[in-house]
Length: 383
Image (cartoon, rainbow, N blue to C red; front, side, top):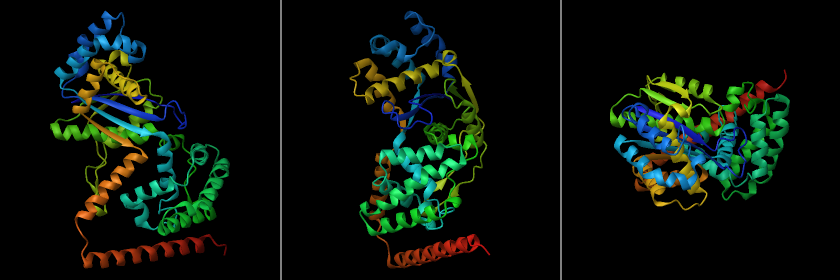
């Protein structure tokens, strides 16, 4: 099987462009080589418009609507499947704040389960959003992207101090305790928290495109398993400014171990995705598959902006909705995930034995938290 990838809304390190609040990956996935089998059909459509290839932004809605029906027929005949992975950029900054400041491996004031159990980590993302306004998020993000080590904490420390002063806004005592302890410890021990990254690649790894890329590969892997077909080639539009990094990340995921990492609550992670596939960065002019993805992403963008799509253009998105998959990183999607988790949790009441076991584990986690804090303080103290 084959996949063709394009992206929209890439503003690099600038997460706060009000005109482009969302980064989106789109992929067209087919069982056979779409570029080989459909190149002539797409080229014929473009030629009738006097173009060498299709680029939706150049066509506009007026020129796209008359050809949309033919594009839909091409998609249908090819049995194409689409995947969309979206990142709300400002919400990503909130998630990164929790990832950096609440990682229990570095912030000893955070108990292991608070960060490493996904539902609790997501609860913290939602809670911390109460305390972070746009100005604080921007300053934290600038610190995270800072290449000058001396400048990092000059930016980030005042953010943590302001967050600490706002703890009273949190609605429950336990959240105030967890967040307050985490902020105080990070303020007192900044050397232990990896806000600064000496490597440019590590800093860029925080960006929306890199946050969404593993999920995009995961959606392609999901189809590969469903169709019982190996992924032969993945093509990505050359216009991406992070092409070389994407190639490297593809190599990491496609050669990772196939053994699952099992976490509490039955959560499993398999890091290997699209095993054995080839990753190619190419010009969209040489890939009709990428041109089709560009069209889908452009139509999605117009819809998100509130434009009313004409019927044939809307038909393309309706096809993608019926034959597609969507993943999103946003506060809204996090709340939805937590609601689903809570509803599942409430369907199976805990037994007395399970409650007692949970209390024992919480007691152990608290002792471990205090021990690691004391150990760090002893090692830090001179003499």
